[in-house]
Length: 480
Image: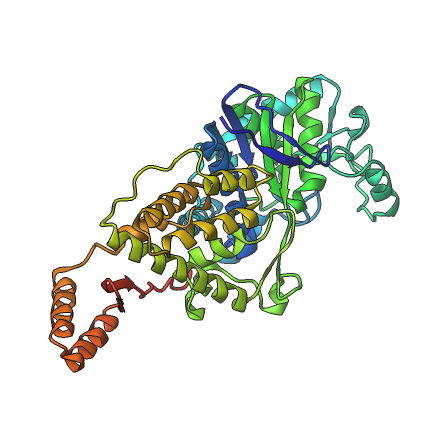
């Protein structure tokens, strides 16, 4: 089993990963709040999480990946101010929260699939775990870490020494308190006490009975309850975006460890934000892009995955349409070379030598804090073999690329296999064109090439005969 080194947000160091249980990894990925379509910044983080999961599996670990769906409890300021995102979406669209959640969850899962992001092993919904959340709040009250108030139940941060500093540099929470403007709430003992349960307000569409009256759970308690239910009171890895560092993940740590008396998470991982044209993504700028926007620029979802792989997750990925188109051209170049080699080798690549130096260099890169840019460089080295004239080296390069793609997730084998999946009409046209070239009827050959291209088949003539690849792309359409 190959070792993995990763950057831990809590210790702020890159260190060897040591699983709680040998050979197994439990991962909790903070999932989306399904009140709207997930833009490419949201989806970028799930590509990173997918690479992490695939890397552990590539290294021989048995992975359990849990990703929640937040369909209640998330306020617009990520703390205890503003309105619930699900409530606001339901009122905006004139539909009940369950219908809102289903619509946007379905769209999110479809986008993930287009990006070749593997489905999580467990995908719990917050609304299905409210009873467990109520029990967790009861436990925190009983242990003196929480208190009922007029508008709900709050966690008392003064009972958890070090609150706010686990995932931030020492002293940062004290500085945050000194410089922050926090809305006054007389129901709280401390301005930074956070809601575990919120009393229902008039017009709330999502309400449950509790010992503290009708209401709904706070956002932070949801992830603690769902992660520990499926992964245990202590688990290996918790991931999210850099926006989750505070308050969300600090609140999770405090309430979880206060409830159990145990270390909550052994490793924390946070992905940097995606920027657009060097700046932030904002609706006011008109630069909040969806996967469905790619087709209008001649690109497909997997080009975005290729683009994401070119930047380490602890650096900001700067999205531009030109960068996406460059990634599309790179993906097309890979597919063309791989498809040609696949046809020449008639679908046979042989096995990968575990000691192959290119494979070994790839494994070293991807297990070094999931260094995808270095991993892509090794994939290019394998592609050089594929483009060579030696049949044995070509087969070796192809086998290595397919092996690497277990982590890269670019669908390379599927695209190669598609090069031999022709309809009867397409195959007849290719055969007729080959015969025309053999007879030096180049006018007919060119006409047939144009006819095939109209069907999405690009034909190239090589010293070894004609080769072809599919070039048509299906439009993604607009969100329904």
